[in-house]
Amino acid sequence: MGGAKVLRLVTGAAGLAATGFGASLLFGGPDLYGTNWLGPGVRDPWEVVLWLAGSALVHDVLIAPVVLLLGMLVLPLVAARLRGPLRGAFLTAGCLFLVAVPPLFAPRPARNPSVLPLNYAHGLLLSLAAVAVGALLVACVPWRRLGRPRARGSATE
Amino acid sequence: MKEHSPSPRRPGLLQRAPATLREFAARGPGFVFTGRLHEARTTVSVGRLLGLAIVVCFVTGLISHVLQHPPGSLVDVLPSRPVWGYRLSQGLHVASGIAAIPLLLVKLWTVYPRLFVWPPVRSVGNALERLSIAVLVASAVFQLGTGLLNITQWYPWPFSFVPAHFAGAWLLFGGLLLHLAVKAPVIAAHWRRRSAGTLELPAQDAPDRRSLLLGLGAAVGAVTVTTVGQSFTPLATTDLLAPRHPDHGPQELPVNRTARAARVSPALLTDWRLRVRGPRPYALTLDELAALPQHEATLPISCVEGWSVSAHWSGVRVADLVARAGGGRDARVRVVSLEQRGSYRVMDMGEQYARDPLTLLALRLNGEPLSLDHGSPARIIAPNRPGVLQTKWVTELEVR
Image (cartoon, rainbow over all chains, first blue to last red; front, side):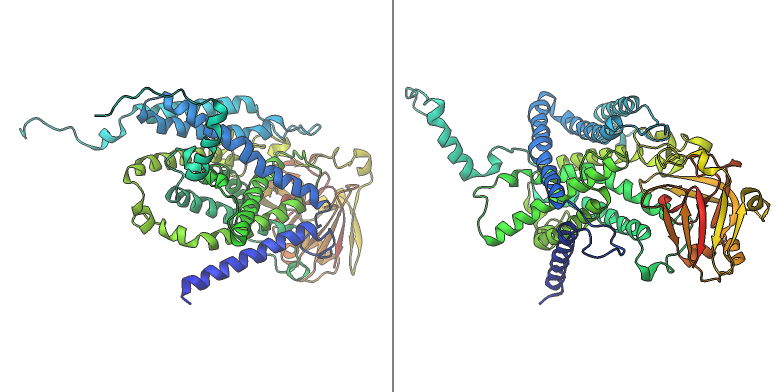
């Protein structure tokens, strides 16, 4: 067997082992490994399984269709050479929005102003504005022509 | 030239529907998903970045887990240097997790049409492979989602975060390795611009692919720049979306658990004494502690939630307190807090930390006596350790 095949088998076996270990942490009960370095085990594995399945569904049923719909409906509305920058802008803005949702909506702990101290709505708007400016720059500046010297009609030098 | 025949009346929707479905089944998802980048070269280009982020996140996560719950055999081996070790490791953990969000979304987009392949299961092997992908996708979204919510201290789920996140990490890492093993030939065929598989793809898609990757780079840069300032103070000006900011906190240092949350009231602090147990036990009042030789250290508080800020501490060396109690160079220390409840009420410190000259029982922070929220009258501060183990409201040390 070639080295590549061996590596492939070993990687696969390691993956199975690690997945099995994760499953044991999940289903083995809080005291499966005692009170040692692995820390307390999971007490309610089926709740975790529910949230795992829900995570996959949130992506497959919510996020992905929304993204595809945006792509199908909005991108064809602009000129072909603007679609790349617009797609990049949507991607960046969407990710900024996702990252901003927890600080925007998390319940604030009592009397600890150092937790979530910023005005996150302002922060999000400011970053989205920066994305818009960036996208305009990318779309409007003739990047290709900047690298090339302008062609001269006759060689007069 | 084509003949024009009178066009027959189009059959109604009901009669057309089965034919459309049959056509979909025959042609596969490409019938609906007409984007040209749902192909292996884009998947590999994004996948290797995502894989790197996940590996960094997993390794730094393991480091953090071991530092918080060290196995007995490692307690005395855990090093107290470099001072900034845990700060870097946990900062990387949160940063790589956040950066993985755009990477994961684009990676899943490139392979999304494969969710609708018909028939869904062709063989036992195929079924197992699809199951492993389901676990991979679920655990990836779960890890990134729970991690992102944890750093804002938002727990809308009924289970305990730490055990679930630890189990999820192994499911994700295992799923990733298995995925790499199964897809190895496809990955190799599309790894380079001149690999066999890449050359077979239409050349006109290359500029669009580059444009997508540039947009992805912008997204990763944006989410990183707006959050990393909470761990890396020089970038604090662009910290717009992180749950902490270095400039916000009493005595120029953010607080994780307030005295109120830990149920430590000023009443508990009257007649405070530091009790030190060991071969030669003793007790000290705050004035007696302040009269001992004071030392200074500039050490960060590096929270498990990823934020870290450096501060200037002054207090008594733990090594001096241990020596006074009759402990040797290899002594461990158990620290007890006035905190009434909580999993870190009692903290164990291995010998590397205990004898490090920078490990202090701190009385002053940034030039002032410790505030109540920062652990007044005395807290432990040690280099290269998670913030949860820098015990506040210390009442007792036990030399072991």
